[in-house]
Image 1 (cartoon, rainbow, N blue to C red):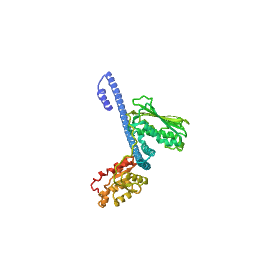
Image 2: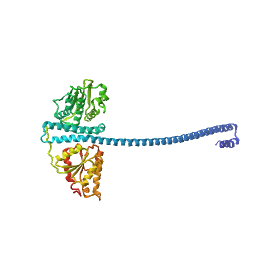
Image 3: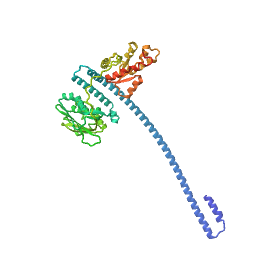
Image 4: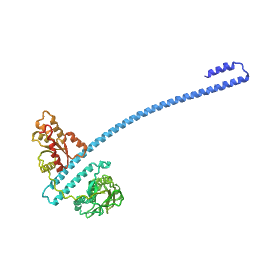
Length: 483
């Protein structure tokens, strides 16, 4: 461009005849033009360099971004693998926990089955003295309460997650408090502890709410009071109208004792789960430190807040307000006599390894007019069904040595389609199988259905439910191939 400009100036301007003034103008034009062209050239060169530098930076940034993306993908992949591994560990821990809870539930419910079923049979004795009948009733109620408390402990995670459901129903307040006090009366008397209760005169006789949860809360507080109150102490339960203003009437429940008390630091953490004053408390008084944690959460779910005031060596006062709606007075029910149950006349195969449960189930079936045969595990059950006279119904436990109830049920059901099975075995495959279960977990109940069981009877076995389930045998006699 510069060469072209100089050639133009030389040919057109300087080789032409012009006067001095025009020559000066032409020289100035050539000089300024050259300078302008040089400036444009330098600007262009600078722009080219800037563009090249920008391209290099863009390329470097792109490479850095790609490297960063590769690194992020690598880190994400590692993180995903870690999360997958953690998820697998959590699933394994959850399965282990479920198995532990199922086994623990089974082991605890087994002796409870003997306690509750035996006391129920005692109450059916026609010439039982009134005092003995009352003692048997308390044994039954205590066992049932322990059974429900066991369910609460197993489902404590549900309480924390707010998944526990309350059941509102009408109940009479005074009998609830009196019966709850009766459950700790023997323990208190053994320590010469004085028990008392007061019910405000302005309170309604009946209310609507979850009476079992209310009883559970009060029983936890009373049990704690007995545990931490020395001999010759006093415990008092009070129910009265609360001074708090609310759309729904509030009732204040208070449990006051003259026990060992607590300092401020202990009061601050007393409602945390598995908490007691110190490690020596567990050694001296026993317990898990779970009762107050459950009570506090239940009170909160029921719309209240539990409070405590305590002084070391003076005693403690636990109180909570609950919104309970008064209802029409519930008529007082007369002491219930044992229900007369129709004789069933069935022959039942009991598949159960626990001798106490064998005796209890045998006694209950005799009460229902049934005969029974025993098998201690799944192997004996299969042998009895192949060789002995067939029963009308099978009561099958889950957890047994040699062969459990699930496997035994699966094998029995396969006889129906086995061409080599005998006629007796194919008939046995159609028999109703009722699961004797302590399972509180849905997974175990689903496992029973998958194995081929027809019904569930929860342990502890109640006579009325056993009668109802066993009485449904008629529905199965219509099965194709049933003898």
